[in-house]
Image 1: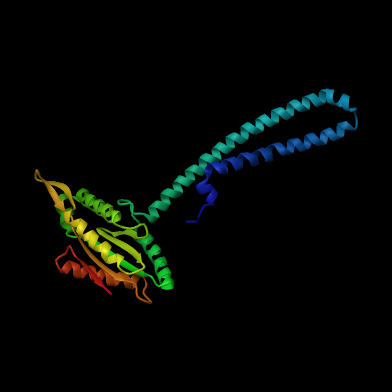
Image 2: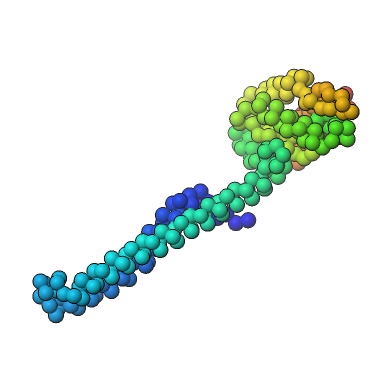
Amino acid sequence: MKRLPSTLIKKPLLLGLIAFALNILVSFLPVLIMHEKHIEHYTTLFTPSEFSNHKWMIEQNELISQALLFSLILSFIIACFITLLAYLLKKSYVEVENFSHFDGLTGLYNRLMFMTIFEKEIQKVARNHSHLFLVILDIDDFKPINDTYGHLVGDEAIKLTARTIQSLLRSSDTIGRFGGDEFILGIVDQNGEAASYIVNRILEEFNHKSIPVSKNNDAHDLQINLSIGYTAYKPNDDFKTMLQRADQGLYISKEAGKNTATFLA
């Protein structure tokens, strides 16, 4: 999708004002030019006093006033229409952009957007030699949650997980929903210790995270746990190679009994 002009997207009111001014200029300027030419012609035929009081001059002034008023009204209507159109286009563009960049359920970056951002982080890290970590998190036993309590409860588990993880991250960290019940993090760090600290905080937080559920009139709290796999950037890594290592770490965590984290260098 091509980008619309930034003025149209971000400043519809400014666009309306510009349209108003241009329409005034286009519609009224020819009238003024013709008026000036007529004045030049008639000044050669009358003295200044005769000219100013001449019936033609009085009629011309009235016509000019009417033309100006009509031009102002028409320009205002056109400017309002253009402003409204620009606002609707802006709203539509933002909605399309949000749909293409963000996950509809959690509001986090979607898979494609996260990958785009993380690839840029890889390029930065390769230049400044800081540490970059890729973290994959998966809700334990999510399929049984859906099968037992329904997809609405599953959605609530996903949203709770997203909110909780996001609350534990720094502003410099990146989070996305990778698909289904999987989440993915990008963590940039100068000393290489932040990733393990954040991962441990997440595991600790989910030791007492639950959602209320009900089955056969039995209401209780359902514990939500995560398994995590993560890895660090190495020279010549790209997103795919880091993802493979982190995914392998996640598999090891699942095999080890879940509710744990595994780091693979």
